[in-house]
Amino acid sequence: MISQPSRHCTVELQALPSRIGQVRRIVSAQLRYWHLDPLIDQAALGVTELLTNVLRHAQPDKMCTVDVELLLDRLTVSVHDHDPRLPAVRDPGMSATSGRGLALVAAMSESWGVKPQGDTGKVVWFTLPASSPTVTLPEYPAVYGATTIGPFAGALETKSVPVAPATETPGARPTVAG
Image (cartoon, rainbow, N blue to C red; front, side, top):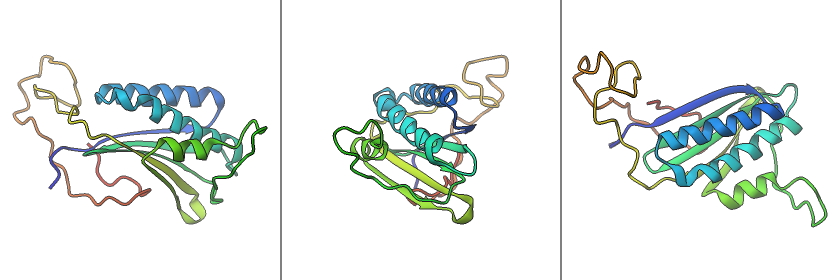
């Protein structure tokens, strides 16, 4: 049984240098909203590295989707691009100025991986432990996603959100949205 709903954020973008910084700020703001401030630096570093790989290596285009999902005690960040070629961690050597992205992701994350998507590309993902029970629903009912008490504050009777059962498959597209 799932005791809390999942939290999910998706950003579609073209991986350009200016967009990478914007997505890093979006991910940081989303984690702050979920009260996961201790994970901000790691998640921002990981998503920056994955998006930089899309910028440098993905073909035929730089279009991608970033998914951030908190499900119970696990934060999963994934990047789907349209290039079916799979990345590999490599040892770039001491004098190299690039090539350490996936090694950084592997070092700072709890787990990471790549899931081929056939001709439609791949998903590269990493997870961070989010065992803190600080993610809770608001004390007041939210109406249509409102996060502050407004003129319709009493319109919704329930404080919980129904959640369908989900299966956790590392690297899979999220199946539960909250």
